[in-house]
Image 1 (cartoon, rainbow, N blue to C red):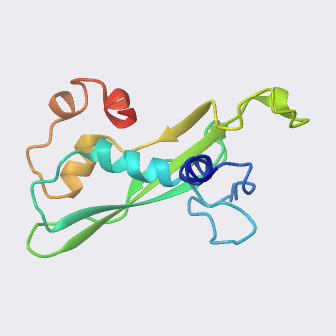
Image 2 (cartoon, rainbow, N blue to C red; image 1 turned 120 degrees about the horizontal axis):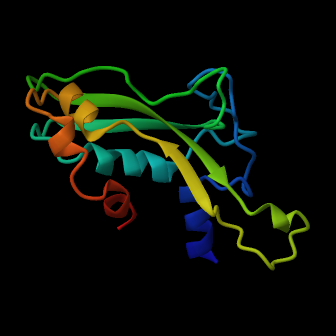
Image 3 (spheres, helix red, strand yellow; image 1 turned 135 degrees about the vertical axis):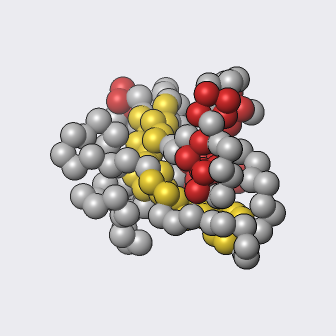
Length: 154
């Protein structure tokens, strides 16, 4: 069972705990609810790409929110910048909502327990690269080439 449990933890499965869904962007660290998804935190580092400065690390804080809400709107953000002169943690925030098949309300075992979709709001590669000190980061070259989703899922 351990691989299944590990997968549920990585997803931030709502079967383990309810999501926090706070009103502010950063959810509280509350033992009664899940703050965010470790998978999305990993996905943001892949989306950000390789950073030239080996002293800069992407630190992402993922938070569960309903992605369709209009008020308040929860969007990903970069909280600081790095200039490459010293060790630096580039602190970012991402947003995730897991979607589950609603037919399994009775927990019969007929439907999967994993999320059928993880709706994630991530920062673009250009925004991560720019915040990490890459002055030549370009959206058309960094984000429009290839399939980032396939790269992340791989």
